[in-house]
Amino acid sequence: TRTPVNVTVTGAAGQIGYALLFRIASGQLLGADVPVNLRLLEIPQGLKAAEGVAMELDDCAFPLLRGITITDQAATAFDGANVALLVGARPRTAGMERGDLLQANGGIFGPQGKAINEHAADDIKVLVVGNPANTNALIAQRNAPDVPAERFTAMTRLDHNRAVAQLAKKTGATVGDIKKVTIWGNHSATQYPDIFHAEIAGKNAAELINDQAWLESDFIPTVAKRGAAIIEVRGASSAASAANAAIDHVYTWVNGTAEGDWTSMGIVSDGSYGVPEGLISSFPVTTKDGKFEIVQGLEISDFSRARIDASVGELVEERDAVAGLGLI
Ligand code: NAX
Image (cartoon, rainbow, N blue to C red; front, side, top):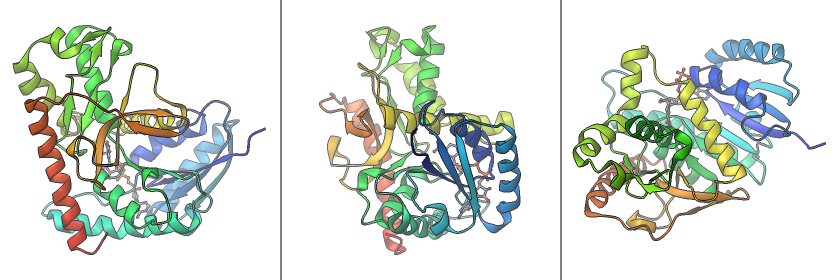
């Protein structure tokens, strides 16, 4: 029998946590044969609600769930952690400037990065979901100097999945027929969902659709602003789809991308495609045996270049801002 994998989830009492924990405990994060211990990190005000979630987890009698720890101490939550899903973050509230937002999140992701550095298992894999996800991941990564930088990732899989769904809608294809979509840059409205290398049932997506107006004024803004559209219609931000994307991200990282396909992940740049080294930016990646590689050699048109540069420029500004605040 396998030793349980320790999975830490921060913001466990929030709405993404509620949609996420049951799927982790049922085996969808790591595989149907992998037992898990859950470590739930919350702020003190969130502990009671986290206890309630833990009661419901008990009531599911998940065969793979071997233990639940609930704590407001990062050192306890990350002790021996193999996988960490950093979901809890400080949301932007009315009147808050970007500097305030970054400062508040630095106060969360700096200490969590340090706790991961000191207490996590050697094979720790980190996914940052809490916004601003890329820069929060950068803060955590820079505060964990003993952990290989590639273990810190930010979630753009929800954007990736949204792009796949929009392509399926537009063409009538099934989502399973759609491959090689890329999200470049920041998980924000500047992100660039790229269909120029995507395939629909083996045919190039951009050539098949052949509709530049749709691409520019429909597809790209629909994907990039989907989060706001969900809030408007649902009255609350994306939760189940975000949890689903977090499951997909880690499952793909651990278990590999399918032959002939790739995924999108926010990862530390090695300078590929002109993205400054060290930034956490979304790239097309393939994964195998728990490691990922950036897909190399893609031709980038002027249209794509301008959009990638704009989103990466925003990441540079965010990095400079957190550096200016002494957070990295
Ligand atoms: P909620 O406000 O429902 O839950 C957040 C939870 O985090 C709360 O229970 C809060 O007590 C807890 N928390 C706050 N600070 C904490 C800390 N220092 N340590 C531990 N827990 C802490 O938000 P929810 O809807 O669950 O969203 C969570 C985060 O995901 C937000 O930052 C949100 O912006 C972000 N998202 C990111 C997405 C992505 O694609 N990367 C998409 C969905 C979502 O918008």
